[in-house]
Amino acid sequence: MSNGALSELRNKALMKKTLVLMLPIIMQQLISMGINFFDNIMIGHLGEIQISAVSQSNQFYSLVFYLGMGIGSGAIVMTSQFWGSKDLDSLKQTTSLALKLSFFIYLAFTLLALFIPGGILTVFSNDPDVIKAGIPYIRYIGVTFIMAGLASTSSYILRSVNSVRVPLIGSTVSFFLNIFFNWVFIFGKLGAPEMGIVGAGVGTLIARSFEFLFIFGHLILADKRINLRFPDLFRSQSAEIRKNFIHYSIPLVVSDTSLGVSLALVAVVLGHNGKEVTAAASIVNTVVQMLSILNMSISGAAAVVIGNTIGEGDVVRAKKEGNAYVMIALLLGLVLIIPLLLLEGPYLSLYSVSDYTRSIAHDCIIVNCFFLPMQMIAFMTSKGILRGGGDTAFLLKWDTILIWVVSLPLGALASFVWHLPPFWIYFLLRLEYPSKGLVCLIRFLSGKWINVIRIETSETSGPA
Image 1 (cartoon, rainbow, N blue to C red):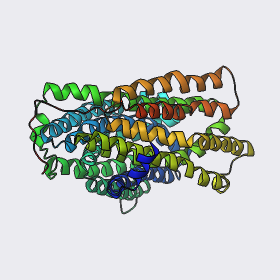
Image 2: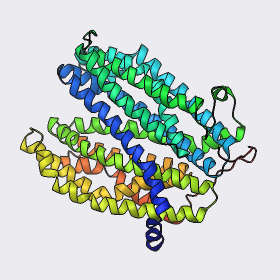
Image 3: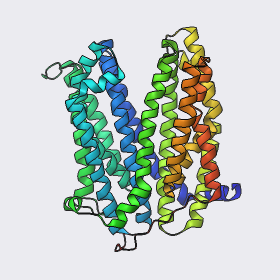
Image 4: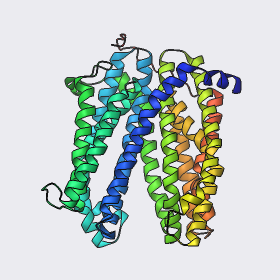
């Protein structure tokens, strides 16, 4: 693998295409994190109840976020290959199907947020004051679910045809709109009423509305690559398109939604080990999220590049590109250990916590350093290479096994039955990542991950 990987690493066209796709994804992920960060900062001036209400409401939004990630990345499996094979008819049909699926699924979540917000919050909190404060907020953000879902799915699909500028601009402007209108409505600036936590919901609603109109509007009104127009959304898809979507895309919807649920349960397991463990895990999770942004961005780019190449029919080049991406993941995983260790002291000093909490955070960082190389390979293969190759049934199978049979049960046993120290609880809860890295690397080396998707009944034409 190494000779082919080194050769592809020197491939300027591959590296340029990867960077062009990766950088906007990084920016969008940072913007998404930034919205939550500034929400917390502004709400932080209102008191602990409001902070907790927003935090618990966002736990529900996280589940919706991972569902959207599954729909978008599931659609990419097909749309990236159709773009590579210049099958624009199938590309348009798949895009329409993914958008309709997004609409109906997010409509269900919107109805839940509007009509049973208290029931949702009760799942995450038993504090009646927190639940009462969170009800109006979760209703406002619930209204945004459909818009956020359609904008997210549109962004993924546009990326699959190498159109990255519009999603980046839409997310960037939405970010600044969110900050501005939060400031206006939370604190009652510029003559607006002082709405507190509800103002944060209003700010999010305005920002997400713009993002939806800009990105989704571009896709159905102005985009020339897919050339999807509003009437296309109401047309039925061929039986073969639906069959392939169920086979290749739905497994990722299930897998990523399952991941969102499992992360919520990980928080539950850690939360039952005392405030020190919860605080330490929260501190380290900020670093882990930053690493995840890098992982998701470069693997997202890899999925599109690999999918385009397979769509073009060049399976040999796809394997070489996969070799290069695995090498990049391994090198990044090794290199990133150094700043993680060097910056541990200064980073932990930013928090006013007890020595015990600091020692647990140190242990969690050591676990992440130990797992980092295989974690990077896990993301690159599972979220990138194998997805681009359409190996989604394999991914669903092993995601299910490694989360629900290995890491989560072992972590729960370590916490509630064996009563192990926090280090081992955290170690076992994170065991999914290196295990997935090993399993997916073996699958990649076998060469069985490549699935060429062709729709025989569709008409093909060249890209506009």
